[in-house]
Image (cartoon, rainbow, N blue to C red; front, side):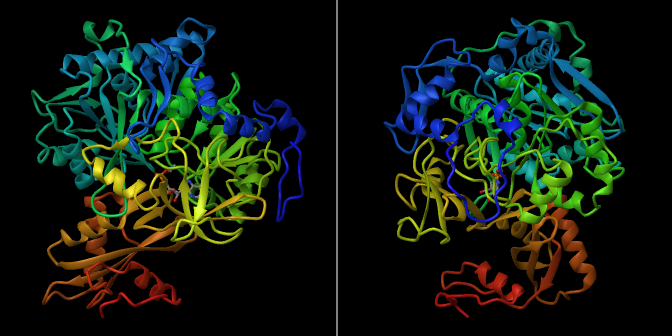
Length: 630
Ligand code: WTA
């Protein structure tokens, strides 16, 4: 690529990387995508399987409810599995897995297809049909992948709830989605301990009226409660003859809902982001192939959790669509020792590792000796996602894990976007901490309050000015919120909720959320979820949650609590409240610190001014206080 001199610290790709890369010239690709945007996406879509081709690539007749590939029929599960069966990939490793306790499973495309058909037949026998919602609540195990693809096969809508969430979070999601079936594992291994997922599910199910059947996957084998007539063991059902018949993938309209994924938003309860078969398929396939430069022989490891969008798009759908080998690991990076990941990379010859800044910082803490004991020479590319990566962690990752040779793909995207949006490709010069530029064809901008583009290096709101195939289609059950939250602030443009700046070279630098979302260890949590868990405790009158900078987690949750009349704010109560939030929402939401206060800063309309709390906690100027009531 023709290069002008870039400002700041720049890492150029090696000749070897560029020579191997699928995309050697970013500028040419960008230009092509700009000039014929629909043509660009249609050409990518052509590489996938459609039962019937589209009449229209992008349908803008009902903005902002955009549609892609209208008139076409397809099925993402068919594209992940069946299409490979008539090629040599039939016997290629599709998915392999290691458990925290050293268990191992592997599935060729042939075998994965079988497992998925079996699971689909089980769901069918429970009456699951196209459009039904199925909630999946498990640790990181292969059955989770079977379950997702089985739903997709039938045209049912999966809603995966992260295995680190707890009773209230699961209950809320079951209720909102009105799920007919819940798929759960008995438990999961986390740092050598068993998390009793079935017990949490039992508690949530007491209040969830719509669930008719529960499929229980045995993972830990500990004693659990099985309710007769409701709960069925997966291994028993799958050994029945009906499980073993094939299961044709449903022929679905491209816009058929594929999944719901609940995520925290600006206010109130988590919202269900809806993605569809056709556009999501094209977006994840294309972005993975080019950004992580997928080659047939690669072993790709996305170390995220399948319970979040990163796992959906880049453990399951993207890799299987590209026909690559995807690796999944059950446990924590540092269990039993901080070399667990490096050991896995060496053992399995992983070529591409995609993880989050929080994991990198957490591993960096243990020093260079742990990774240096392992042969990491199989690695060709690295990736990061979830929050801004500090240059120090970037450089450690690059030097110690990537031998100073592996480019780092710092990918900015969201549950809502489905795919990478601001991202380098291997041929692009990198600056530590910047995701470089928008993916070819996308038009993004950084604007001020009035919607005007800000000058280089000025901070502003990050927006997206053009629809893209894997964009969310709506918020399930709440289309008004979809319009109001994303498309109303700057009419016609998508509001990301992030602030950013663009440097003199056009490189984007993400600063962080501008709404009430807190990113803790890369996980997305809403202040509202934490606050409502706190006020559900008998001692609490009011609560406010904010995120404060944390060395490893990026942000840690700090809460301010007003107690009810007569209740004393002891250290013991603070601890009890922390545990309470952990029980209601999940361990990741457990506050770092609880501070008892007698009042909270509010606007005249009664909204808590979290920015004032944050400024006070950090000892900085709170800025404009004209709307503050007291
Ligand atoms: C943040 C995760 C900086 C951002 C895929 C975004 C990032 C939110 C990056 C979405 C990155 C994600 N650099 N910040 N590379 N990637 N974010 O929905 O604030 O869990 O809006 O999707 O994560 O979080 P979500």
